Amino acid sequence: MPTKKKTVKKVASTKTSPKKDIFAGTGVFGWLIIGLAMGGLIVLLRYLMVTLVMPANIYVIEPALIIPGMAK
Image (cartoon, rainbow, N blue to C red):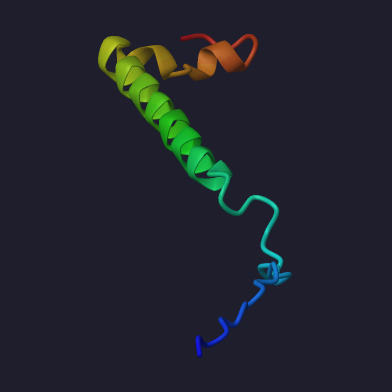
């Protein structure tokens, strides 16, 4: 006599993953770090360009320029 096959019904799992940060998995923090690094690099390059191209004596302020009536 043939045996009867058991049918097993699969029920869709209702498990949900635990709550994560709203930005998790979206790469926002990665892009933020990349943007900050690029901004820092731009600031560093501008600083190097200014210090190498401009002479340092243009930043020196003579006291005669600050105090009115003072002779050089």
